Length: 528
View 1 (cartoon, helix red, strand yellow):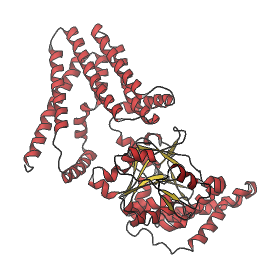
View 2 (tube, one colour; view 1 turned 120 degrees about the vertical axis):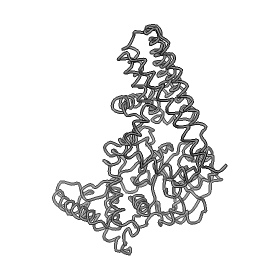
View 3 (cartoon, helix red, strand yellow; view 1 turned 45 degrees about the vertical axis):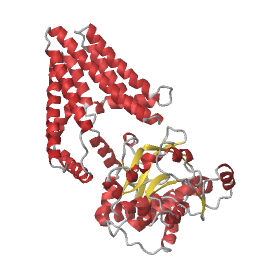
């Protein structure tokens, strides 16, 4: 944590909340880290943070369990929702969660959480079927607790963690649920990485059976406190009846520590519930917000959302990306690094270009080499995320290699087409393509930024257009790298090299003319 704080560009202060420890950890902390302040608090689990955050005045607080390690570059992306750009995100975000691995560095621990019903009980889980594509994808999360950053004011406004769940379990889901009902959002930030041992305190104190019993009891408390929708209450009642009956039927065959588990959890939850005033439920959000929470974070909805969002690879998502994911998983524990795959992709594309230079009539081999280059290009980023070696230099190198590959391949296409057709038209189309593409890219890079309110309004308009704008999506397709690589492969396979060159040349020149016209029209309406 100290290293992560030191490498952040923000002013970070590290403090320890001690819950009356008796294992000598305070003495160790004093001897080795004398400058780290200690907050002495009774052992109230995550609720210890409530009064600590009430006594500080920082905008954002990063709350970590006692069995968490942070990657040294985790702080900045984790606090970016509040200290970065985007007024809308800053006003709505109340919690941000990092990508969390186990201490082995390869087993996914969670934080991109879904919510589902399991026989009448609400279950929050990050290990649902189909969660793998979501691990490295930013988005919303239903709950997170082991390592989170919170907006301090919103945390206190929501009441922090609820003491009725002590000694712990489910209080993070309860806090996140209240945040969503208040109109806020919790973000999953996979660019920030944490490592979680898991069960360092609870399993040692309560054992596995005790932890399961706490989870059962607190799930019941969560449902009685928060759920008001008739459908949810009916699900809970029906599930409780089935679980109570199952406890009776299975009792003779269940070991004593787990016998009557649900009945005991029910009794403990009823006893605890009487100690707190009845909760009026979600007054601000109402039934609609409650129902929307479970719809948004259902595992099936989250997987479908990811499938719909992945429009950057409309073709390779069906076969190249799964192969790239398998390749990255196979190499994740090897000495192969992402840069090796990046350079292998460049070598494959260059080899394809060389084959076309020397054998203009060759078709199958260059096409396969281009496809192989695209496989390496898709796998290098996934390998970087799996090995936690993603850097700005790697992203810069990958982007530049992509552009170099594009230039090399289209030059080779022009050379092969010019050789077989004995005309200069392929070279003309190549020059027109390069002129249009790089003038278009130059315009994007140098375009003046719009004011903040225009960017927010423009983003909303773009979302509305993209929902039904199939013509707009078709218009942008030829600029998609995945589509253009497949156009090259198709051109090689069908001997339509000149047609491919003509298509991209005409397209990019139309794009830069249209783009410059739109920018000029916008700038004319802005004050000098």
